[in-house]
Image (cartoon, helix red, strand yellow):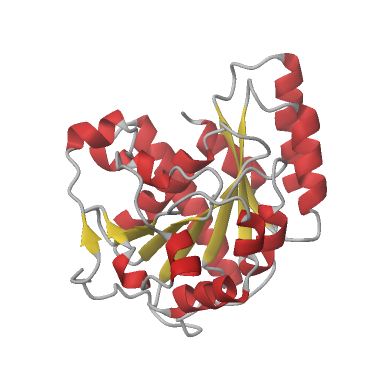
Length: 278
């Protein structure tokens, strides 16, 4: 799974901004936030066996699988610090490319660094999957917050891993694009961005080409990760996705799932993504 390292190394952008990350002053030393005690947040305990079965890096002590996500974390943290970013969206051109597993494992990798707190929001309200990644049944979440006024504290879940919590999507809805651009959603994003210092806020977003959700939501995020599965995603789909995102949001990087096994057409899709992201 060295595609994560190779992909991010070749996707890095040449940023010149000298901005500092939120919550840090120029020249200040990196500090470790105090421990968080989860009192009102629901906590679930996952066994190592469950985490390995779900391909979560927290279930492994080490290895290439874990190292790949740590490399991805290093690249993401570096670019976010350089630009003062802390809100990252994860999407893919089409479904089944691995965006949700990437969102979850990147969040876990970030949370393993004690300098960060991490909140992952399942914003795929049409086809939610973050709760499934942790082996959970359907549970209330973002939809119930937006439409039923359920307090946020009753919806967040701490899976017993580091300084990490996630907000499930909740029940599926047909008008997901409208929900993500609603004033209440905008206020929620602002609150979540600033509730804790040194927080990374990740959004697992729907596939880009199948719904209007992502294009409406990108004003709320600082940068975007695009997940491509070589062997499934075509060059045309990559080109369409990059065309839609152009001038709308910085592309933080690209993740190439199952790189090296694809056909010539799919290798061309990889090259297109690299050329647009550089």
